Image 1 (spheres, rainbow, N blue to C red):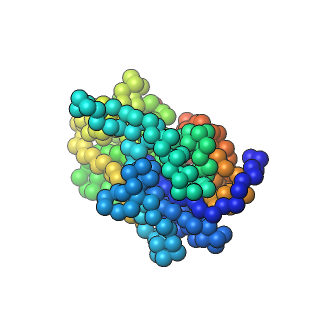
Image 2 (spheres, rainbow, N blue to C red):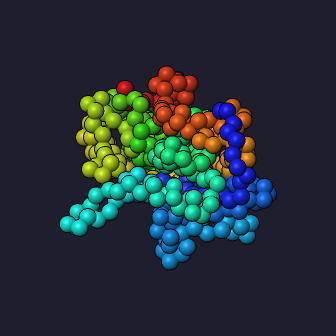
Image 3 (cartoon, rainbow, N blue to C red):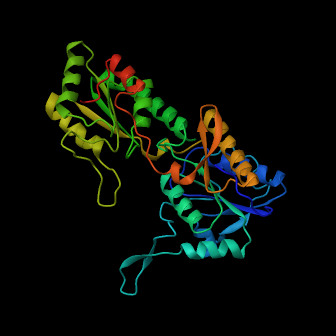
Length: 367
C-alpha cells in the first residue's frame, strides 16, 4: 500500500474488541514498548470503544496511560488487560428507549470527536472480522487506524495465521486425546463440540492431530447415516468406540444448523449424539469444550506471532501506512488494506491437503 504522509506522531491508542484470544496481551506489550521507544505516548482504551465513550468502566478510567510498567510481565497471560466486549459496535450500540424497548444508536461520530479532543494520532485496533470491519468503517470516517488480526477461528483471508489459533488447537487436541481411553474403556461414541461458527479450522486440525474418527465442519455438510456407517464399520473391525469432532457451525445435508435466536450456536453435539445413538444403538456421550479453547496462556508460537504483529503495527504508524492490517504472509509480516483484509472469510477447502490427508487416513467427514 502506498505510504501516506502524516504529521509527527505524539500519541497513539490501543484497544481490543470481540472475543478474547490467547496472545492479546503480547500484542499490547509489543505495541506499547515499540511505541514508547519511538518517543510516543500510549493510551489504552478499555472494553473496545466503551472506555472512550463512557469515560469510566467498572469504576476505572476508560482511557489510561500504557507505560512500560503497565505492560511488564503480561506476554504469557491470557485474556486482555484492556478488557473487551462483543457488544461495543459504535455504529449500532444498544440503548434502552423511553418506552422500555431496546434499540440502537450510531455513536461513531463521538468516537472521531473524542480522538481529536485527546489528540490521539492513531489507533491500533486488535480484533477479528467484526472488530476490524468497525475499524475500517471508522477509518473511512477519518480515524487513523492500524488493524491487528485476532481470532482463534483463523478465518481472516488476508493472513496465513491469526494468533490464538494454534493455542486453541493445542487445547482441543489435548482434550480429544484424553477422551480416547475413556471411550475405549466403555465402548462409547464420544462427540466433542469445538468452536467454529463459520469455518472448521480448529475442528479439522485438532481432530486430525487428536486421532478423531469423524470430523464435521461447516464447509462439508454431513449425513447422519454416513456417520453411523463409520461407527458400525469400526465396530466390525473390533474398534468398538469412536471419537467424533464437530465444529459448532457444522450443518447437515438437509441444511440444519444449531444457531439459536441470538445467533449463538448451541446443542449440535447433543442433537448429533441422540441421532447417532438412535442409528447405531451405541452409548453416546458429548463434551462441549467451549470457552476453554480461548482461555489460558498462549503457546510460544502465538506469543511470538502476537509480538511480531504488535511491533509491525507501530512500524506501520511510523511509516504512515494507515488504514491497513498487519498480516503474516509466508514468513514475513506485511501491511494489507483493511478493506481487503475483511472482505472474505477464509474457509476450509473441501479438496485441501489437510482434508485429503484425513480422508487417506480413514477419517470420515460425514459426506
